[in-house]
Length: 141
Image (cartoon, rainbow, N blue to C red):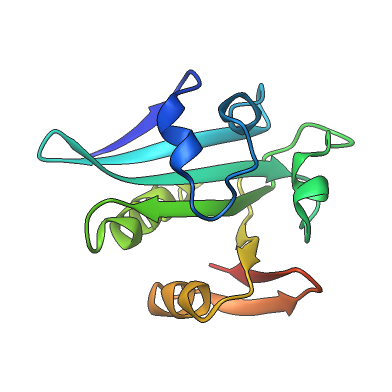
């Protein structure tokens, strides 16, 4: 079951991808959010998303205030799991949530680390390479 986190939680400090982003920053009013995958009443995976009017390539761009509040681009910037396969399940469920007629989200893009693990994860889940940046890679779903 997918659940949206509504208040900062210390579990967000466990992020192995972007440990420098504080829990409060992950839940900025209307511009960022966190979703969790719950399986057998246990936390199985966490997904952090930013809503931007641009495609960020750095953490500074990701955390900057948008010129306008928009949900055009959902930027998946961190995902980690506590159970094998749960991260993939969470991404698929999130994509399903965003793909309905009238959804304000037009694009789902990642801001991923430049690692083989991230590349394999996103390709396995159906993403394609959008652009390679100096510090990150953007994949698009």
